[in-house]
Image (cartoon, rainbow, N blue to C red; front, side):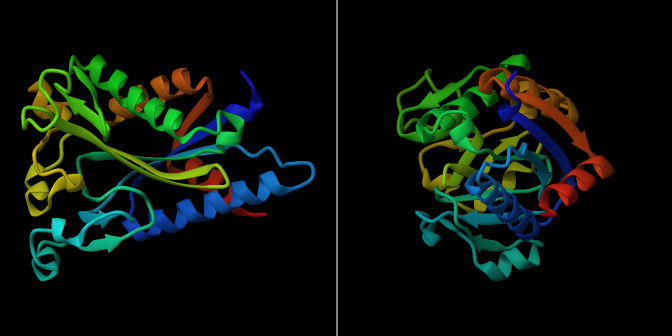
Length: 251
């Protein structure tokens, strides 16, 4: 396995959204600076796993009208709505969701955003399949859908289980995916999820009818991510993840 495709998967536990966003930006800029050096500095890629407190985020192409309640009501429920720099429309993050932020230098994989998104989707599809949940894609709709091929686009029978949205600078990615494991799906009633009014949202536990351990799901994500991206991935958490990131960001 090429050293240029070594990825550190850092499990940070629960982290406030703005803090995770700032951390991603710092890691992305560190990777960009490293590749500009002569000779280039061969740093590891980074995959962050986090769980956010309840928060709604709106991407650059989002429509604030897809937030269906007042921000005052969100504050009463302990949430907020943040406009951010990824692609896509509005979504929710919160407890019971695995949020993954792959920060990769695609020049060391393949500088192709379309291919990158399809590999992330396939990673999640393979994870869901391991739990017996049949998923697929819907043309023109980024993300992973349950029963995607059982109906025509526009039918509410298709259910989104994983939302995606990214930003890329100098071929270095940030933001990523949010896999619903066992969240309170009622949060999604406050929005038009991803700006798509004619489809529903679901979770692994809703589809399987039984408990799904987030740590087990993360292990499956790491396994399939490593296989599809032909990467070596080391999965760490706690103090080890913190020490790695401190060293990584210390130029």
